[in-house]
Image 1 (spheres, rainbow, N blue to C red):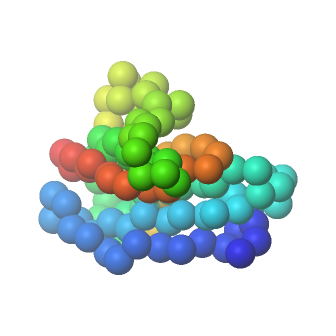
Image 2: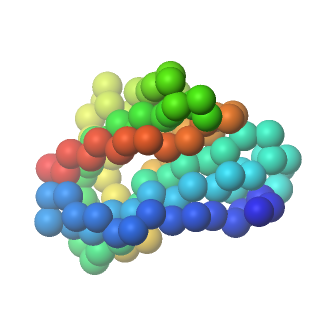
Image 3: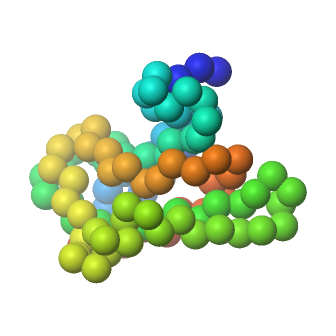
Length: 109
């Protein structure tokens, strides 16, 4: 697809707010050089100071191994929920090579 091009999920509702997942198969930025994917969770509805915890689970291409990526949001979970301040706010979930999104768990405060 090329860096910066994404596939988005259908909008889904959790905690009274609409959300979407954005999947960049070749990375979000040109410097990613298509060596890994980027996945973001985004607030899709109007709202201010929406606090949320989330966990994204990945499934490898064989369909056998589930992987939870705990790179960036592990620290966010330890310090409390992340605040999304306006429609279109995105939280960087992870960048990981050769895995597909399988499950997203989201808790809104």
